[in-house]
Image (cartoon, rainbow, N blue to C red; front, side):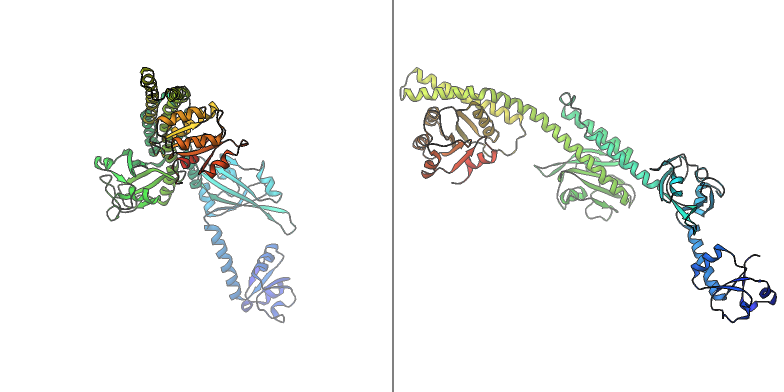
Length: 556
């Protein structure tokens, strides 16, 4: 006999005579004649009632009408939620055949999929999962995650989770499948991957070709790639990229498309006002979304029909290298996602511009290194000529003959050679601050290798360096020219350290003197004695630039 719902107020004698097992839901008195001669099961919890009805075995249900109405309202609500959920939901049997599906999954299948295998109903081309057999894993009691790919269908990609449904005895009798549309997420990841790959293209430098490509050629190549990638990946038509000049605070044009000639040539600086959105963004180092160009206080007209703009700073290793600006002919032309992707790609542009700067610096550095190589090779021979001529001049004293004249000419010409090499190095180099520019330093060091290294360190700082191997040669040079500082080793090969220090002081009382040591044992205690006579500076070999600058410039 089928289970029937009976309203206590409408119970007939026939109903009472035919029922054998009754489920009672709600406030029905045990003494009610409705229940005479029947086995009754009383339940008050709606879930328990639902479970009992699912198990079956009742010929009738006696329920209070109000309670029953509330019961069906709850279950109707749950059914509506399942039917109209934004996920595709299906119940399958243990073989994966669909036994029930909600409206969302039916729409994805194109028709009612009941009776079809899930994969067939959804027209799945490929399944990505870490389980070799997802159904078997779910039947074993494990929740399984899979990604479904459906080419040329909507949605194209869906993430599905398969969960076992248990019977009261603990066996798996059905599978619950929840599907979520992840097409937008997949497309987003594809775009991120494309941006990353584009960034690799921008920053890639072919080591084999660097020497063959000039800086202007490299710039044109970068501009071409930037223009192509911005169009293909971000789909922007009105663009402007500027490079930041740290020395002048100027944002110099590198690339523009769709901008007016006036805007493209406009001089902009990294300032909070008066320099448009670009200057504002560069100054604050943060992105700016101009939703309405007609009312924005920072906006300066870039493109003729522009109504909104998006500008991001180009920052690499916490240093501003430029700005990236795009404009739209409509108000509110850029979304939060546009901003996010533009900021991501800006990191790649910044890295590319940084690499371009490195390349320029590398080519400049190559020229500088060539000059340094020449200087390194001629430094000691020219210094030896200077020292030998100075010693001879000192020995000849005040004689005024042709020999002395020739020696003085040799000294002058040797210094001219050194000055010529230094000027060429300055022209080939990047310029910048040279803390010891205009200074002259004498270095007394018997080890040729250390003399050569000291020579290069001092001249890189902008000073003119002259080196000798003995104290006698150093004193001879001191007698003929003024030096700003003298670096003398603690134990000259021909004279004690303290005696050399005293002689330098006698020859040039105002010159700065620093003793240099490689942590060798100072048996004569030259440093201690010299400190008693006013020595202020000790330099450790090999020289460090900050120590050299301090020894020459620090106040005593």
